[in-house]
Length: 383
Image (cartoon, rainbow, N blue to C red; front, side, top):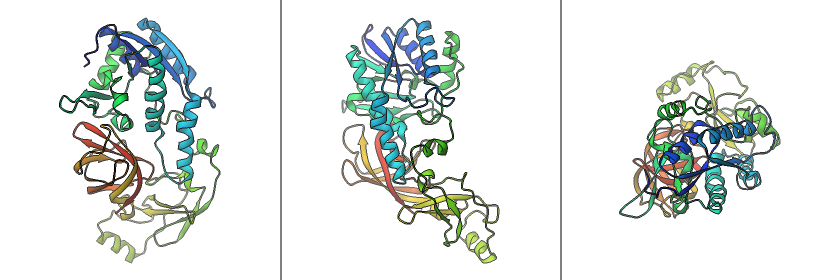
């Protein structure tokens, strides 16, 4: 898995979860000098039921004690607020839906954390991400690979990492399936072997998202309209909705006429009627209008092309134009597409099959088989 000489110092980001705990154990077994670092990235209400950094640190410290390694508690909250959270709010206020975990990896975990680890004399850093790093013998470039467990692969969230970052990073559990990680943790008696996986954005946790956003973004009510321009209700502010959203719209069904039902059936869409669910399809910031449609497969929800900007490429430059695969959201199978680069920071994708609810602000991440090439932020999409 690595050719680093034994005794080399590795600083592991120990989160309190089972993946980073097993990461530290695996590296110690390989002969590394392992030092643990616990990152505190959020300070607002971190003693609440939703933000559990204090509990996580206790769990991380307990793991370090069992493994016999040192642990340091480091506060990156100021950097996180400036580099990640401020951008998160700007994007939501502009009507887009950002992915702060991607920015957190690029700016905090593999920048602030990496810099701190290097000051501690580390040769490498390691995290519990399900991904892999490989040195390409031909190009002498470091490649970011998918984790071997397809249900846990996290390369999507790591696509902004560059050569300097990858050259100093280890992902030991990327070689394993989650079930094996859990088995190892139980076998060696780790106190968090059965700890539930964390979900949601790190600073929001599992709290209601709209409730959290309310504290930072003012409500700006406006009309909810369907494709015919009928007003169905009122939204609380476009920032609080995302494309493809089904829950929390506060509107009931509107019964379709016979002519409308025939037109829908002719297009091959799923049945539309009084009880067919509504989905957010468009957000018009200029008129403060939320546009909704009935039916999961409505044409307004499907896109064959997208434009992306703020691109970041693992190799340092854009791949050659041509056939590749892409994800426009994390929980999605790779979709065949054709890449057309405008330059190293802008590109277009044309998909073989239309993609559902392609959302500005989210990331389009490109793959060549198991190799993650990088990606960019979705700016726009068309059917």
